[in-house]
Image (cartoon, rainbow, N blue to C red; front, side, top):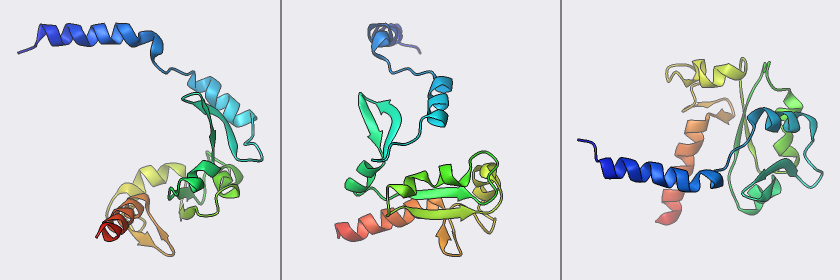
Length: 142
């Protein structure tokens, strides 16, 4: 049974905060990312929550990053894909064979050689990366 008060309250909250919602024009943002390079200090041409984003803050925060790239990417050139590595020397790189879409499609099949939860060569997939981080966290917590 629907609760009419609850439904009305949701709409009331939405109307009350409508002007505060974060919105952006994705096409405009993508255009700026394509034409405005990352600054020499690692600052990106993007502001989020009234703050410029900077690659170096990831390292300062001690955040571990696995950068997954495609060997034969037809959407993103190698220099752009590896750009964060110019600013953060602790990034772990995993290069998947095939193209950009294969990482999310064929390699997400758990039975493939390069499945995202496996290790392959000196690389590991993003799910394996997260599982290993979780294990590392549990070990440190003990």
